[in-house]
Length: 128
Image (cartoon, rainbow, N blue to C red; front, side, top):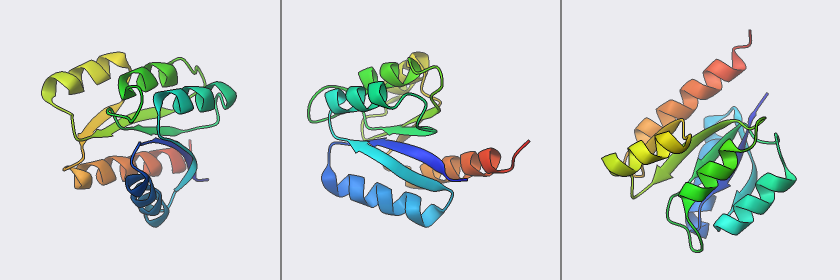
């Protein structure tokens, strides 16, 4: 069964690239995207438990990814949260983890991000 991905990214081109990436990896299905904190919050409110992986950019056109992480963590039946951002300094990375992110990747570390996602899909799809 594919992992349901909720993608929070303000740049439309990047949303398209990420959707293509998850399609090519296999084991993932992008179920929704949001470009602002407000859109993400509304989707999470209306779709509790309907996602297995939230991929969150920190700098959004409106609002902040940090608040999206909080909103994701407030969903008791939600999934994993990974930050994929150009602003993942060591201090920001630590703060994201403290807020509840499972992993944080700089966008320049695409290989690390892909490896983490592959490992997650392998674990989740291997069954009990």
